[in-house]
Length: 354
Image 1 (cartoon, rainbow, N blue to C red):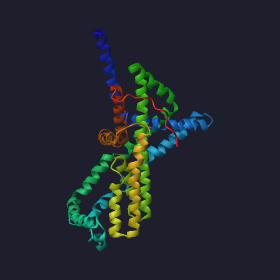
Image 2: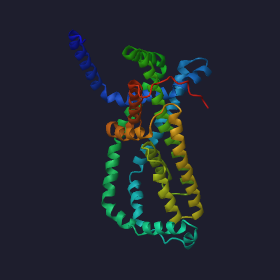
Image 3: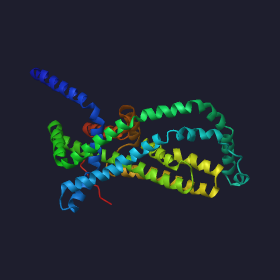
Image 4: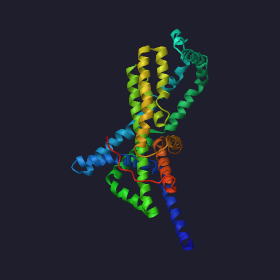
C-alpha cells in the first residue's frame, strides 16, 4: 500500500536531485570520462601500488600519467593535428578532383575465375565519374571543413574539459575505495545484494568499452602512421590522426587506408603500394579481432550498442561523447538486462592479466 504522507517528501527529493544534476551538467561529461578512466585503470593502480612500497601517492601519480598517455594525449594530438593543418585538409579532400582511374592492366583479365569480374568492377569505377563528382563538391568542401572544425570546438573549452577530467581522475584514484564503497552502499540500499552485483557489472561494462574502444583506436592509428610514413604517402600525420578519429567512431581504418592504397597504385610505386595494402589488411584484421576481444573479456557488450553510443554521445556531449556515449549505454543495457532477469548476472572472477 502506498504511503501518501511520504509522497511530498519523495517528490521534493526527486526535485532536488534533478536540480543538482542540472547544476553539475557542465561537469557531467568530464566526470563520466574520469570515472571511466579510473574504473579502467584501477587494477593497474593496485599492481603499481604493490610494487612501490604500498605508496598510494606514487601509484596515483604514475597511474594518472599512464591514463593521460593512453586516454587523453592521443585524443588531444588527433584534434590539434587536424586543426593545425586545417588549411591542408580541404586540399587533401579536393585532391580527388585530379584523380584518374587508369585502364585495367591486361594481365588482370587472365586471372582464373575472378579476373573478368575484377575488370568489370574496375571499369564501372572508372566510368563512375569521380572527377566530375569531386568538381561538384569543390564549392562546398571548404564549408564542410569549416563546419567540422567549428564542431570540434575551441581549444580553450576542450583544454578545460581535459584538465577537469585529469583532476577528477587523480582525486578518484586517491579515494577509489571510498568511492567504490559509496557506490556499493547506494546499490545495496536500492536492491540489496542484486544492487551490489549491478554496480560490479557496471564497472566491468565501463572497463570493457573504454579499453576496447580507445586502445584499439590507438593501435590502429600507430599502425596507419607507420605504414603511411614508410611508404611515403603525403600527409601521413594528418591521415593517421583521421584514422584515430574514425576508429573511435567505429568506422574502421579502411576508410582512410584503402583510398591511400588506391592512390599509391595509381600515382606511385606498385611495390610500396603493395606494402601499404598489406599494412591495411593487417590493420583491418586487428580492428575486427582486437576490439571484440578486449570488450568481451570484461563484459558481453554488443558492438551495435557501442556504435549507437558513439553517434549519440557525439551529438549530446561533443567529442568527449565518443567515449562517454557508449559507456553510458553499455552500463544502462547491462544493468537493465540483469535487473529484468533476462540474463541473470553471476559475479565473474577477476580477468587474468597477460
